[in-house]
Image 1 (tube, rainbow, N blue to C red):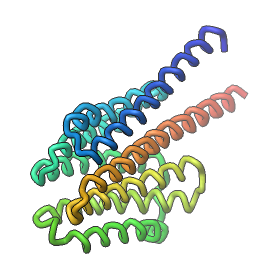
Image 2 (cartoon, rainbow, N blue to C red; image 1 turned 90 degrees about the horizontal axis):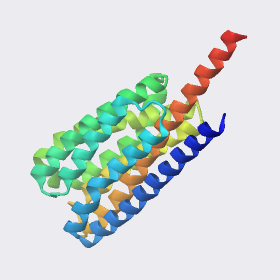
Image 3 (cartoon, one colour; image 1 turned 180 degrees about the vertical axis):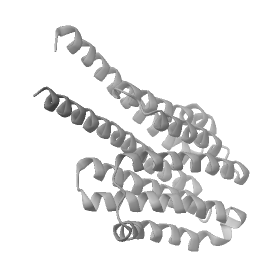
Length: 243
C-alpha cells in the first residue's frame, strides 16, 4: 500500500468515525426529546438518524448493497410517519416497516445457509414468546390493527428464528451480531406497543428508540462484516488460482 492509498483509507475511516459519532449524538438527543415529548426537537433529529447511519455504511462499504439501502429508505419513511403518533399514521408506518423487514430477510437469506426445520423452530421460540406476550397484554388496544401487527410478527419471528438458529450452528462474531440485532428489534416492537397500554407513553417511546438505534447499528455492522468476509474469500480464491 503506497502513501496515497494509506492517506485515502485514513481519511475514509476518519469521516466514517465522524458520521458514526454524529449518529449516536443525534440519536441521544432524539431519545431525550421523546422522553420530554419535545415535538420540535423530535422533528429536527429523528429524520437525521437513518441518513447518518446510511452515510456511515456507504463510507465503510466497498460495495454498498442496494437492497440494504432500499431497506433503510423504507425504514426512514416509517420513522418519519411514526412521529405523528396517531393510529392512522402508525398503521401506515407499520406498512413501510413491513417492507423494510421483508427486504432485510431477503438479504439475510442470501448471506446464510437456511437451517433445517428443527433449529428454526427452536430459534423462533423466544420471539414467539415476545409476540404472544405483547398480543395478550394489548389485545384490546390493538383493535383492527391486530392483523397487521401479527403479520409483522410473523416476519420478525422468522428472522429471529433464522438468526438464532444460524448462531447456534455457527457461533461466529458476525452471526452473534445478527442475532443480538434481531432480538433488540423484537424487544423494540414489544415496548413500542406497550406504550399504548400504559400511561407513561413517553418513557416507553424513548426506551423503544434506544433498542431501535442499537438494533439498526448492529444490523449495519453485520452487513459490513459479511461484506469483509466475502472480500477475504474472493482474495483467497484469486491467490489459489494464481498458485
